Length: 263
Image (cartoon, rainbow, N blue to C red; front, side):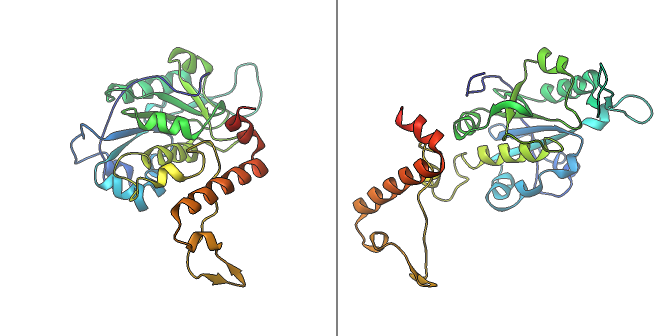
């Protein structure tokens, strides 16, 4: 799988609120807002922290919009079952193909433009700053949040779903990874960060880890701010920051340094 998702689709509006159903009603669709569609068993989890700080303000201002699809609504039978035992035996439960497919179908019918369909999965391609940048330049994303032992493989194959991993560990579901992915993309949208240079200078934006940051007081617990940062010489400051970024990357992430230096 390549580092750049290349699927398509669309959009929906919301206001900042603790209750997703309130988010999904009462406002017209925003034609030019970046859109996050989330298919989940826990729609009440959204927007969560995405409704706070800069992402929350951007949501309120209509720079991006959120639509949470409740997977339980598509459950089967009296109890709206969404899962069943694994074929071949084994522990846990697996989300049913028919249930997930119906939720995907309804959600994607509300999508417009270029919106990759993504399943948050530990076996997916590792999420990177480049992927976040690529996704932020689409019209939005449709995110499928797994639970239990995962999703019936036939759904993933049928829709040719992109699988993305937030790291080499396992969580109880895809909701936290979904929020992480959305946050990483939204902060790159024009008008979200107060200073456009922030996204350029931070970790991973140029393949290196970020240099150390300092602020007042000038001396704290016997530790001084490096003199070069208070020298007023912008050229020397830039050089120092570059050198520190390179040193930290070499020391802490030799894998990134090797990739960056082309060794």
